[in-house]
Length: 501
Ligand code: C2O
Ligand code: CU
Ligand code: CU
Image 1 (cartoon, rainbow, N blue to C red):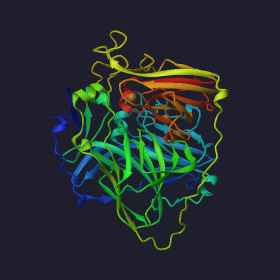
Image 2 (image 1 turned 120 degrees about the vertical axis):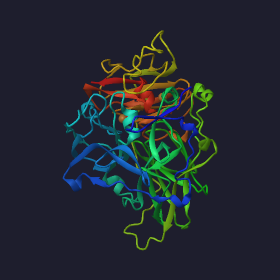
Image 3 (image 1 turned 60 degrees about the vertical axis):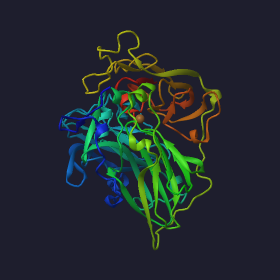
Image 4 (image 1 turned 135 degrees about the vertical axis):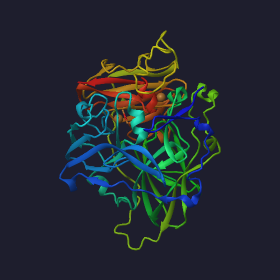
């Protein structure tokens, strides 16, 4: 089974990634300060924000620049902050040489504003959607979503954090000083060869999704963060292509989980570990009052198809156990402008009533060898599409149908509530649905785990999971997507689309 890597932008084929020695960034003396993406607040910019998708070079390691993509910079993008009730004018310019799109992941807006594969921005063009912000405070993100090019463009850097705030959240007294006690953390695993970012390709990559043995936080390998010795809010965004994290702290301290993809929980939940699948977000409050340095760590990701495991893609360092994500160094904070607190009750939310569901749909996320006779090997149907992905005989589909931009798979009535039962083949898949937030109603026929609670937009499935969904955003001219957020699976066909009218 082949495992190859492309030096980003260089088009240079390298040897097998598995043979490379991780010679950079292993030593704790290499730690660099956590970069905080610049904050672009819509109100401070008179509700008018500009993003420019561009290419550049990023020295992840000193003296070893990599060719990367970013928004308004060379890798990743600014943190956008918008306020509930506002209308925000975005101007997104494509300064790349290829098509791109920008999807506002988690934003509840009509289909034509969504930034999915249908809202193509050609090279040199500017897309100007006005985004109505009508949902509660939450941690979202934005990323490239071109048809067949999402995985590669996100891997190379096209993603950023998008925060929604509102009066209710501001009234809670949570830590909210951006970059000080309220930190956005975009977490991504990436593969490096001698300090330069490479793009792993090949059949195994199509199956498992792109992984890497180096974890970046806000684009930095091996970072540390100086934080005040008080309560600090972490907004974790799993912006990886495929990796599931299993977060905890190196001293096993507990923390308070306060928010999901869709916003704050009703009440905080005290935890010692929290798993996060691709595209999932979590807000945590961590107490650094004892002043002791501590690291956020992750366990290995065991999510692999049986075939992948036989192919031996397991990473040595992952297999070795916990991996450091980010080291915290608490500092005496002097006089805090405001010291955040932890309220017991956060928000109250009205959920849809399952009894009002008018329709049940089933989605099976398919992954297998050449299903449906001849759609696999060689035909390239819905898989390769010339985007450099190499499905290599695998078929990725939903309900037996690989993604087709010209086919509407499901038609939903605007304002209705439905139950979608989603399951997946061969491994766990993070199913994401555009234009909605949902509640997990059941998992494998049983009441959902406490960790499934809250308003979600992405959830892991393999065993059947029932989602209770209310469709309040229209998608008439352009449909919404639902897809696996292992980006290589989505690009290769594990995606469908639905209209809401
Ligand atoms: Cu985060 Cu359809 O995407
Ligand atoms: Cu989305
Ligand atoms: Cu998948």
